[in-house]
Image (tube, rainbow, N blue to C red; front, side, top):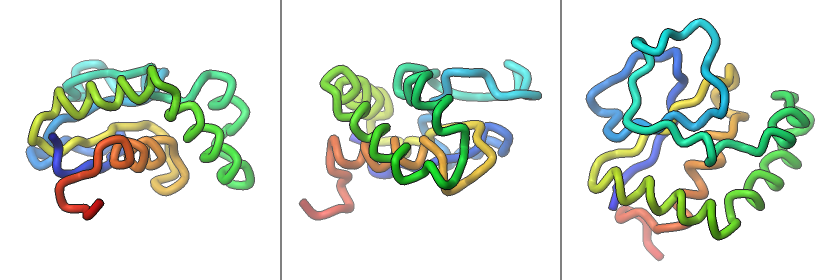
Length: 127
């Protein structure tokens, strides 16, 4: 299984240290050509539901409620299976979740990274 899960904006350059890159937005990022965004998988279904994404609107005052609601979505059995699929596909590589949001702290990829770590404890964490 993967040993590390990180996040990176779609507008940032790819690095060899990114490992297995998963684009985790439902919508394609503005101003990025399909040739320039490098990823191993595009998993739209792990992004927040359209209704939750629209409600959040990247408003900081909605963050805590958004995070709780998104965690609830991610804890559904089908989402747990999707996260395990990402872990299996990555093997021992680092997983980098690629997202387009401007805020590097208050974005769904960070929540998803935490949930992936919760689904299968990472090797460097004690259970």
